Length: 176
Length: 214
Image (tube, rainbow over all chains, first blue to last red; front, side, top):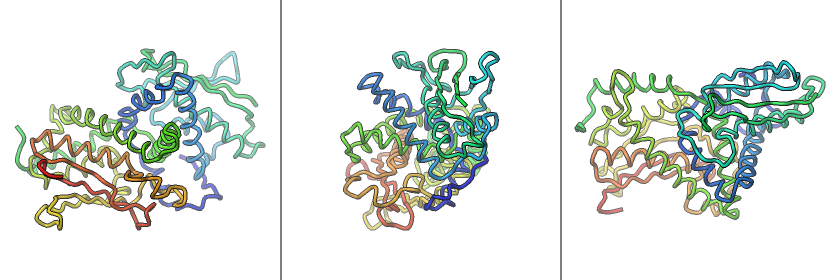
């Protein structure tokens, strides 16, 4: 992964770098994800979405606090961001809408081997699209606008194996 | 039938099996996962009126419950040629350090060495409190790394460990193994050293309390 050190970091970068170079089995995530989402859902669907957004927002802040992806073009940036989650996502440009990209995988780290779960009308692995949207929008504020020429991102999970779709699919829309 | 001691052939299977198991698993970035875990802890804290101790307890109980389900499933799951993880288990607690090392490797691959030291067993007769225990150095704690010590106080933590996910995982995994092999221990895993508490590095201790006393 191509990352550059955030020059404002005052924490032990070597320790962080060691963790950044390690890959951990997604079993740990899949083990607790349904229960955690269930806990968030105790207060209803809107509250659960708010909680997931809070988690994604803080995750992005913590991650970007130490390292920023070097890539400026989506064609190179997106594969590296999706690789953080593990599987290879197919990145498909929409032929009709040039500001729309489809991210698709059959090996979702959240949905793999999971039984279906009732999440109201939420897609099971929607946390990934929330994370992608937040990290891309955060990069707008961090990166040089002459090189990273995007002004807004929106991501939405429209298919999920956890909801018994044939694959997991995220629609990413952006503005320049 | 559970064996009394794991022999050298099964240890060899274990070392081969850990690599095969890790290779077959889908994997995500460990640093990303630690960021997610810390964010989840904070969200639980928000949902529990700012009470970090309560948030850690709720999350820890969740991890223990779910770990129990996964461990029991994994023990009986064939990895290669019908060989199951159960072959690595015995009634001798002196095999537990090896089981833990294999488990770390199965989860983190070669990166396990960067995070954990080798588990060290202290038998009951060697311990001051007559309780067998396993100590594991946490060389590079994924939870307190990057935390400024002023942000989380000892009062905030109360009786809970900040690395609750690790202690809960360790406690539930070893408890279920000991129950599976028919031993009578109540397993407790605690973070006995932590950088947030001023120690040089982290340490986990797994206590083997005989079931008639705790």
